[in-house]
Amino acid sequence: MSDVVRIGMLGCGTVGQGVVRILHETAGTIERATGHRLEISRVLVRDAQADRPGLDPAVLTTDAEDILGDDRIDIIIEVMGGVDPTHEWLVRALGHGTSVVTANKQLLARFGPELLAAAEEGGSEIRFEASVCAAIPVIKVLRESLLAAEIESVMGIVNGTTNYILSEMRRSGMTYADALAQAQDLGYAEADPTEDVGGADAAAKMAILSSIAFHTRVLIDDVPYTGIDELQSDDVDIAHELGFVMKLLGIARLADGAVSVRVHPALVPGDHPLASVNGADNAVLLESSLVRQIMLEGPGAGGTETASAVVGDVLSVLGSRPGSFLGGALADAGRPMAAEGALESAFYLRLEVADRPGVLARISAVLGECGVSILTVLQRGEGESARLVMILHRGPESQVQAALVRLRDMPEVRDEPVLITVVGSGEAPS
Image (cartoon, rainbow, N blue to C red):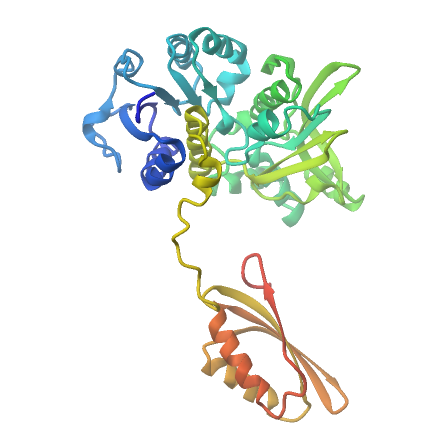
């Protein structure tokens, strides 16, 4: 490849536009790490007149031949979805030596072996991290870090829609229909959610994961699946009473050298690592006698998250230039270190004070004068002393430290204040 790598994109919806944005924002980092400058040469769209932020209208086309027939294009990014005509187009591109990055799980679960064979024949590369669990790099971990680990089991929550629905049914007692409607309102479920709630989406992802984990070829037709659309709220509630959590799981195992892959609702013990994965998040638990258990968890869907995985695959195709592993890591070493106290956080503050009228008001006044807001206060008397515990709203650490200096000088404060950072959302529940 030359220093300029020409990209052709099939599709430019939510994920495709995310890819364009990331490539623009990280162009300098990519060039330092790979030695290549990426150029989006052609983009297949339905409407070439529609505005696409970050793209020159001249690169837009409604004719796939402008991409497939252009020998100057080095990598094709496929984010249009569907099986037909996508299948034919990608086989053609790979066979002609053009590398492909795709997020198309249904295509891979049906025609993965054919696509891989076309890549081998054409001397091209195919990458598909974004097809499973979006930004969670489970395929990369299996293919690279754990290639020799002899994986024995892959178990996961690989569909965010169903995980959100089951989480809400358990948390708030919603019916399945109400939880599904809420998931649709929030954008977690499609208008037609059949593929998600029926289990087909998870089955496609498990076909891909088990193929890589067990170094074999598993198609979606090899994966029996059952969804959550027949579950009753009573089942979710009773499971909870018994100490279990209901999840839609993909489970792939080796059994006497044979591969077993299934997708179905399952009861997970409350202390199991997968039990605490809630909302629309995904998680995959990998087991091996060599590495025991490794769990990867994070957002399993979303345009930006999926686009990030697509760009990561493009970089995998390009590879890294010699010395770029550390060189790329230190590419921005000229950035200054943040000043002490510059970051924001919420805090837990404990004070031992004299138990006299007005003490809390004076302490609150000091915090307020320093720009520190109190979320929660707990006060307990202990003879002539009292213990004050406060959760402070998220704010600049420097303001909290300034307040701490003044609190130490107050005669009513009898011991060194205890300040502990509150992580997570930045605030505690009221």
